[in-house]
Amino acid sequence: MDKEIIIMIIMLALIISTAISEGLKHYFRMKKVTKADIKLDELELLRKQNRHLEARVQTLEKIVTDSSYDLKQQINAL
Image (cartoon, rainbow, N blue to C red; front, side, top):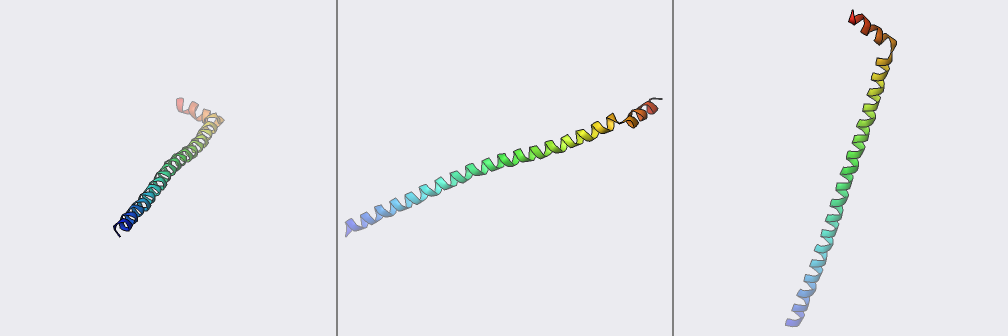
């Protein structure tokens, strides 16, 4: 009877340790994915900001190269 209990305890310990091991593997795998997602989100945010700034620069270039802008500068210089 004692041998059966010892074998049962050993099997139970094996099952529990395997479950904990698999749980930790899953946790660390998900943690890596989360960091990668954050980096991708940051990259996408930076791309959006870059497109927005490019559009603003194009608008400013149009204003500065416009002939009426030069005329205003000349009038203000007087």
